[in-house]
Image 1 (tube, rainbow, N blue to C red):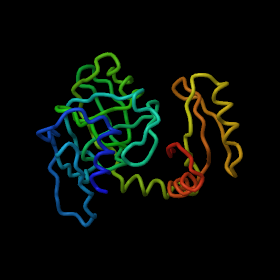
Image 2: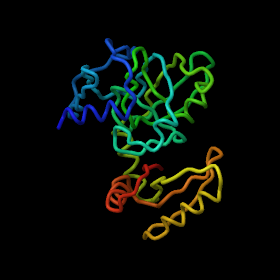
Image 3: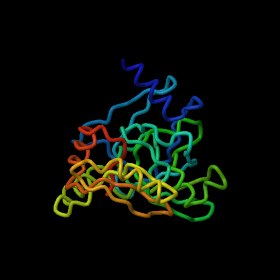
Image 4: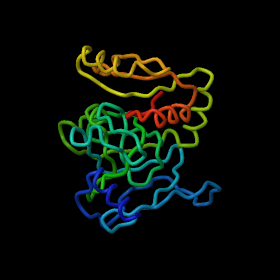
Length: 235
C-alpha cells in the first residue's frame, strides 16, 4: 500500500527527474529541539524527503517554477483540489499550510502564498507556484527565476488564527472559478441545495463560487467530506 501512495504522489505532482541533492539554502539557524511531533517522510523516485518545521522569519533561496493547466482540478498532497487561480505553492519539506512570501530576485516582485502541495521534483528547483502566483512575479514569461522565500506564518500560527475566526465565521469552501459570470451562476445553482449559502465573488478577474460561511477550518472540512464536495478551504 505504501508504494502505491508514493506512486500517486509522483503521478499527481509531476515528478519528471530524479533529484540527487537537497538544495534549499537555509540562511537562518534552526534548532532541532522541539516538542512538536515529527513530520512524516515520503519517497519519490527512490529518494526520501524529510519535511520539517520551519520558523517565522526563516529564509531560503533557490529556483522557482510554476504549474497550471495540466494539474488544474487534480488532488494536491494535502487532499485539496489544485486551483491554478489560487495563491498556493508546492515545496518538498515545508509543512502544509505554511504561509510564505516569495520574492523574484530578478525583478524584486513578490507574492504571498500557502503551501498545500509537494514538489517540484525536478532537479534544481525549490518551489512550484500556482499559475496566478507565478504570473504575479513574472514567471509566466520566464518559466523559472531565482527567488527568496521568507516564512511568514507556521502551521501552528495558522491553526490559532483559524480558531480565533470562529467568532466571525469567515471560513468558506471555494468550489469553482470562471471567466464568465454566466458560468459561475450555473455552477452556483447546482450547489444551492445545501444548508449553507452558495455565493459568487469576483477576484483576480475571475468569478469564484463559494459555499459558506463556516466558523472554523475543521467545520468546513467536515462539511466538505460529508457532502463529497470537490473544492478547497479558504478564508
